[in-house]
Image 1 (tube, rainbow, N blue to C red):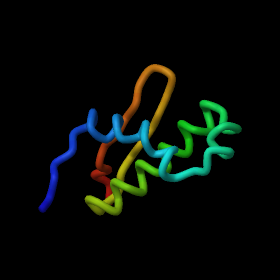
Image 2 (image 1 turned 120 degrees about the vertical axis):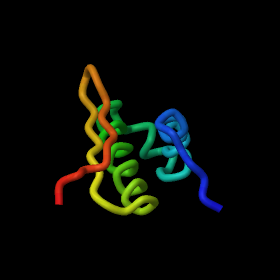
Image 3 (image 1 turned 180 degrees about the vertical axis):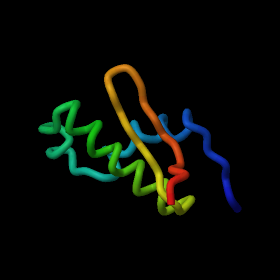
Image 4 (image 1 turned 90 degrees about the horizontal axis):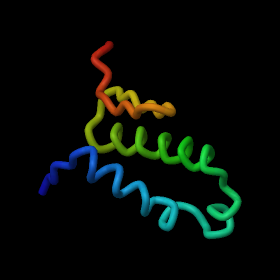
Length: 72
């Protein structure tokens, strides 16, 4: 069964990622910037694994971009 996911679902799930992916000690020493970087890498890997292709995941102060790259 394939389940469609929208951006809100993906981003909401990111809040749970540290609990499953990293030990509590590592999460306690991680800065907010390091957490964003780690979760961005995890999101990119998950999108490639789930949907294939090339993905652009970019986080800036004012915006977040999550898009399939159309370049070949």
